[in-house]
Image (tube, rainbow over all chains, first blue to last red; front, side, top):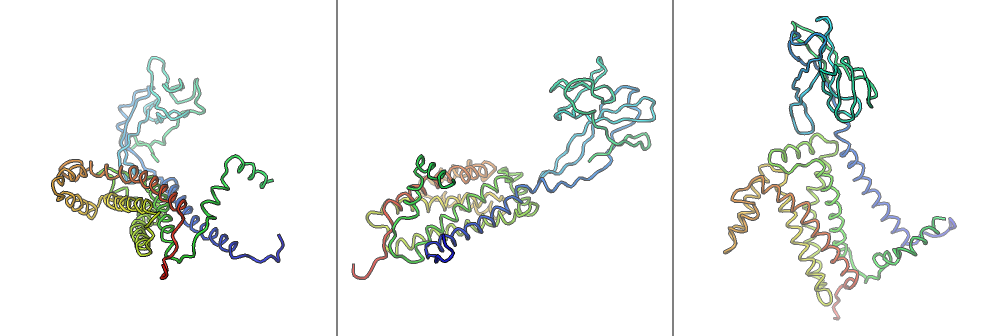
Amino acid sequence: MSEEQKLSRRNFLSLATLAIGGLISTALVIPAIAYILGPTLQSQKTQEWIPLGSTKKIGLSTPTLFKANIQKQTGWIQSDQEISAYCLTEDGRTFLAISNICTHLGCHVRWITEQQSFYCPCHNGIFDKEGNVVSGPPPRPLDRYEVKVENDQLFIKVG
Amino acid sequence: MIAQFVSWLDERLGWRNVWDTIFKRKVPKVNWLYTLGSATLFVVILQGVTGILLTIYYVPSPDQAYNSVQYITNQLPMGWFIRGLHHWGASAMVVLSVLHMLRVIIYGAYKYPREVTWLTGVVLLFVVIGFGFTGYLLPWDQKAYWATTVGTRIAGVFPGLGNWLMRIMRGGDELSGVTLVRFFGTHVWVLPALLATTILVHLYLVIRNGISAMPNRQE
């Protein structure tokens, strides 16, 4: 097609229709993407210390399950969420708080006293009492919470 | 290369024929008022797109509907824009449908052989009003609640069947969560299905019969 060729009325109108249509679609698609992605972009992580309970309840060298409720805001819904952690001490002074969420695909692990190990029912992941992987698919040890003790109360950092 | 692929595809789909029938058909010399139907169709598509986007967050339950709408409007990026388009689009829909209908009446375009096109248009007008009525309740605020209380009670004064009609619309004696969900279901499933199929017939008839020329003094 030569540059000299005159733009016919028909061609001009179809180009104009295409351009205006494209403009309107863009004006709709860009806000739509922002709107859909909204909640994924707005993750405001706030860290806070959660009291779990008295350190006296933690058995010596046995993981003990502690539960605490935290307030969670997801979208327009405010709800209580339960946080669970296995707490462990060897000497009564230094404490370990291990998350009960399996590092494989997020199921909840359970302490089995007879086997002295954490067991994940989903894919047979097994961890020792400090959370290190013994066998199964988990790629890394169980996560640990930061802990602090104030007036014999054990706190973990959540967030 | 691309042209080759396009004609390979066309040989199997015959889409060029369809395209030409829809967009390259002959039309008489007409004025801008003849674009009102296309304008209405544009708003229908806009309402469809924004409506689908709204259902991503909206929850049709009495204890969450209001909060989810507030979340869309105030928390989400561009949520106010999507909801605003749907809100104003609803009014535009009614206005454009009525203007389109007036044009058809004034130019006498409903006459032979286009009576059935007109009748499907009447169905579409009722569907549009149904959309407006059911959609108005969904924000679940004071205005929505009382407007629907009044609207369903108007149905209630219909001779004989009134009370029965009102109970069906409300899903019981009172306006409640049951009413909210059935209005939602009607708004997002029943009416869109009805609208889409009726528009298809309407457009088929417009293309099949061609549009009417403007009436002139000599006839």
